[in-house]
Image (spheres, helix red, strand yellow):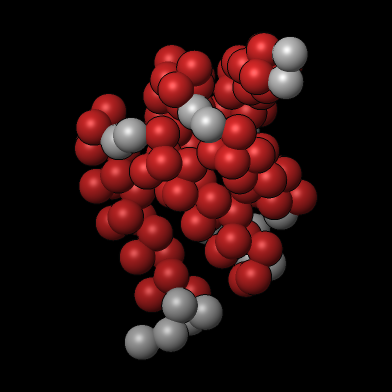
Length: 113
């Protein structure tokens, strides 16, 4: 099985997203960050549009925005990097990015004071 094979990749991402979306409220900040970072890496490496599960990204953004005060600087940076990669590959819904980025800007500004 090869992750670059379209049907396998879509099935894997679909199953992963379903499970992750159900469990994301149990994730700690590192788990949340690692999840979106991995999607960003996939988007960067595969350069194939429309494979990232939008339902997960929306849930991720909501969960992250609620817990962002617990993120350390590395988790904040990795999350923004991942969002950039997802946006670059046109796989990031605006509602997901905007709520997180508002909270990210506030948290990041406070952490550098």
